[in-house]
Length: 339
Image 1 (cartoon, rainbow, N blue to C red):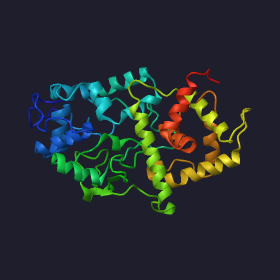
Image 2: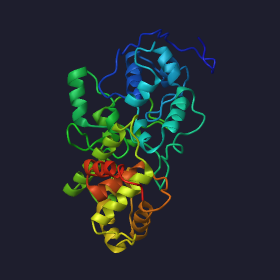
Image 3: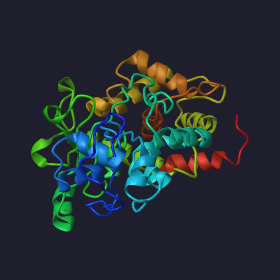
Image 4: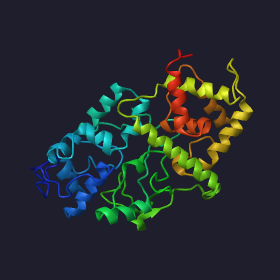
């Protein structure tokens, strides 16, 4: 059957995908890449045509598209669209800070060919963050996966923004070296150690330290916990701001009348941000007094402003040092009138 480009997909899948089933916590990009290799496809477009009936759409590692076609081509044996979105993409990381209606809109969008970017509807490009998602892997996971499944693959939990530590092996993740990337996408590929480099470090900020590792691990834990809320739970922005304000008061950084101890806030914010900013993905975090002042002021604004999810997670790490303390305080606030 010819596609919209007049090209013929080189293999009729029917309802049988050569790679079989999902591996634990696998992304749709990963299973498509496994198919690309097992099917011995010469061109990336061959796999795109077979799985998505399109030479390019569907090939992005972070935001999927044409999922209705994918489900049809795989005979539904790999699940329906919603199951794939919630269990095999990084989109759930962004969902708890949006709304149920917007999630429904996003799911409708990824069912077909995306007419625009989802980076704006999901606030991926706010507050100086680029909206790009590095493709990441854990070298220890690669060894484990090859031993257990005879193939290394991309783990969904590693791809969440802010996750730079593997929660299984407690070691820093690596990313695909720039020389292995294809313009506009990565092409279909699976993790190989020789393609991986350590997390992009800003040279002026130096290499890993013990404090930096603990902060990066805390941020990763928060990111994973945030994504785990989807699809049923949401973080109400007004309640989150109230929780941040109450925590500032508890730490002596703000009084009940709303006055901030700005000097202390700025010093504390910059001390927390500096080790995290050494990772390029997190370089938008506050780097000077003005940026730190703007950040803490934004936390207390009414009405609550839209912020990139990583700003919220940084607030959690800065004020609470971990997700559990924040989430307990947030849930406590639900039983109180919003101030």
